[in-house]
Amino acid sequence: MNGKQSRPGVSREQRLSDEGLARLERQLESGINVSKQVLAQWIKRYGEPAREIIRRHRRYCPELEQFK
Image (cartoon, rainbow, N blue to C red; front, side):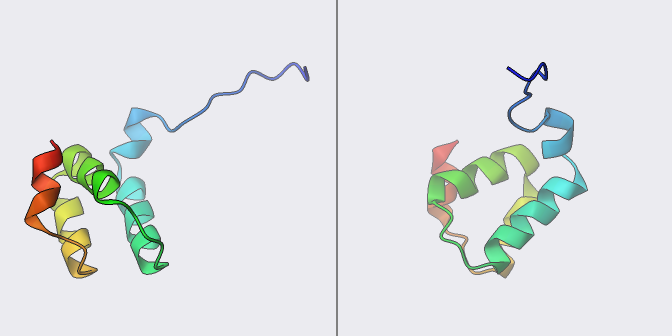
């Protein structure tokens, strides 16, 4: 190996930051098909701010609340 230890994933602090919400916004703006389960995870982590972004992109449905 090259001597560097990999650190997969994103730290919890980064996920729960404004940067994380900006990442959600970019994903939805790009038009990629984000699954309902993934959108529900965003809502679970970020709450109302994520819900607002998802609504703004017309991807919200009450079913997202059932994945909790």
